[in-house]
Image (cartoon, rainbow, N blue to C red; front, side, top):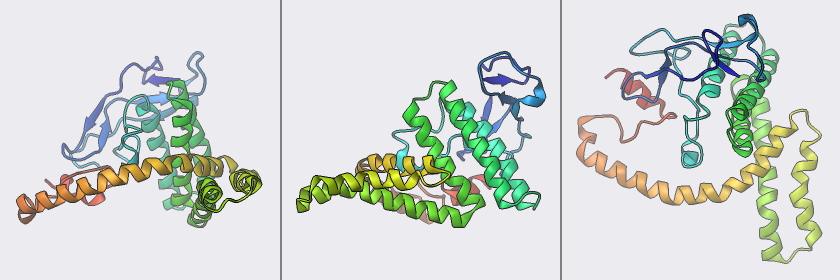
Length: 267
């Protein structure tokens, strides 16, 4: 359950958009989370996301971007809403792990182990706030891959390769069956191979979701690109003609546009 600083059930989240032109926010009041829906435990047993120190140009660790959703999936998953509280607490906990890892207080293995627990709590928090099961697991898959990207690069590359291979098999099965008339059992093997091989690993859920959910999202990505790329090209051409020579940033400031976050923080 999510609670406020008095350990009462959370009813509001106070956020400030800082700076005004950047997709970053500061938490104005402390919030917390504990697993389950019973009476609030002692403060020491609650995972707290403490209020940020007010700053016009907050640095990482003193701000949040809410749910970090890739641009291509904005039409499916918003960066705010029911997922706001879980995302804010998750950001806070992930920053603690990242800081400890960067400072040498913990090694890569401990960082990953802590992130596994944090990412699990994130998924449970999403479900407690009635985020749909498929969406909760999909968001969990993204943050699970991110933990390896930040704390175990070799493992991250390995997971990406395996997930991409599994995704290719799943997408390729119906294509191969229709295009080449392969026997049904060949398609069945291609469809089940990612599941069977994933079960051999400790983090098999990550690979299963990255492969099968990823395959379901392929058509979405293709359609999004077909609509988004021409729009972005047109927007940038018009921006360059009107604002480009004045060096007024770029047309869109998004959560993954680091250069624009820096630009916004200096304006």
